[in-house]
Length: 188
Image (cartoon, rainbow, N blue to C red; front, side):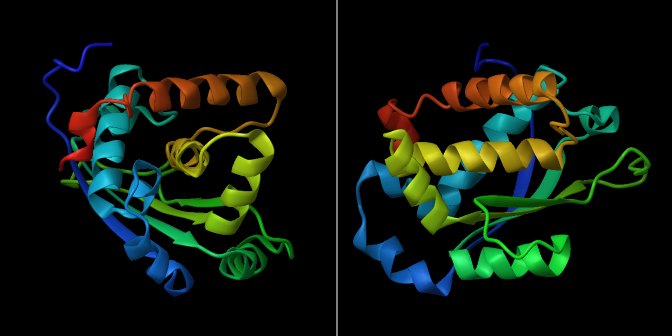
């Protein structure tokens, strides 16, 4: 996939970091902690949305006709994600990622200038634990979880193994297209 494709997109992102991790944002300066930077996420979501549109990677075809999108991402702690899980999904455990999509099959977008996709929440503590278990970086784990939640915002579900495999393959594709080793990515 070429990055030369002329597809003008705008992403309006609300990015919040849990108060409990606010100190981390300033204490880490290496590449793996770009996940605390709003500019990084704007870049990521814009690039991912381009690939989703080009690859017809949303389950909602009306998305392919728009070029302005809005969503929120919050990196929170286990207690906060457990509270959200309990309140909105009636599950009393913490989890790694929650997504609350706004778009559905019945959504009407003809008169709207932009599409509000929904809200994503990632537990930093779960991500850290899973990154250690899987022996990869915290940056990769958070990208993985955010890509998973992002696809849910776009209508992806995984009710069977084939759907899960398709979703996982598309997540790998989205992350691989970021080219995180490219130094130019680090200057916003």
